[in-house]
Image 1: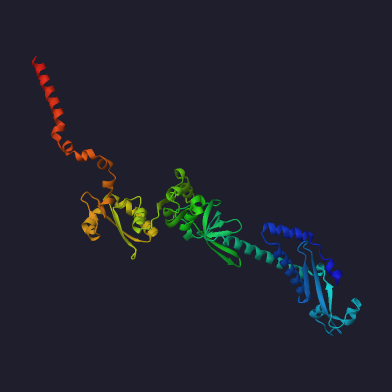
Image 2 (image 1 turned 30 degrees about the vertical axis):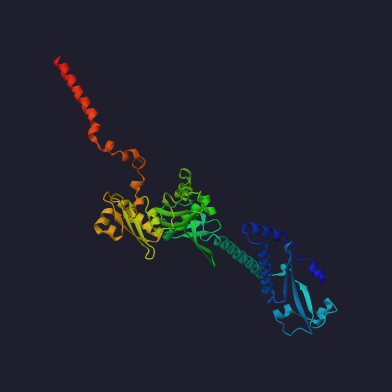
Length: 434
């Protein structure tokens, strides 16, 4: 018995090399491969002897050598018509005593099995078991790798077109970019590298099924996280994103550090950071605004670049009434309503935009309690009037305000010029007479 355990049947030099190669190329653990070899030898024994219940396979993890032991039970005599299972599990007492005189009925006699004794079919079964185990482990490793990337971005290469869908090669497997997740008007060429957002990773018998997207709003967020260190570190937060893929995106950002400008951090020096994202999205326009906890200010920012006279927001009903100058109405609504639509998605409010004239005709200023000024401005509070606050000439010149005679007496201002003209005319008359 001791002699049986000392020397394995196979030294495993070639097997060890093959296992190390698979471990590097397929990223499959050595323990899984050794377990696959053990199971394959058990399957081969079952095919050769009819059962593997009395088979012990010992695989050395260091040398990858293996030993196969078949245990037979000692009986008084063999059946008259023994089956294959009887021959592989039982041994007559006289035969056992020839091997070792101490054996009695009921003892277990170990026999070493040489792998070369397996027939062609048994060897084929062992090979198939190993290959099947390798494929299963490879699928499991790939699934775990890409499952960790779910809801994140990764880089892929356009491989081929499957109908209206596109196959994207992610490295170790292919992902499907369906027609619904493609940007309208975006031309994809085989061999082109691009960033995609991993929507879902499912495990199937044929391997992991990965769905990716180019239209998901989170794609823009992840791109800014990779480009802007402040966003990656959490100093700047992206609070909301509204996107119409291929056309325009609005993004609201907030800074957790008073010394960091969230919009400037996302734009970068000379627009370098935002331009990198725009290039990846093939020219899609991106509007970056400041987030505000006050819905009225947030809606005003979301409607930029349009100027707003006033915003009245109802947080319970999630509705907002916005009044803009007449010349800003088309800009606030945007082409085909895009600006207003994106602002509504970004803020979560239903936004009703009226021009100044429409608001005056409908009596919205009185209804909303807004002090409407005849000069075309309307404000809830006079201190928020930009014309009064932002005119430094009128505010910071007390001499003109306190000296009404100098400002409001046009006759005295014009007398010197009229006197000069009179003197010139008299001199000219005198010269002509002379």
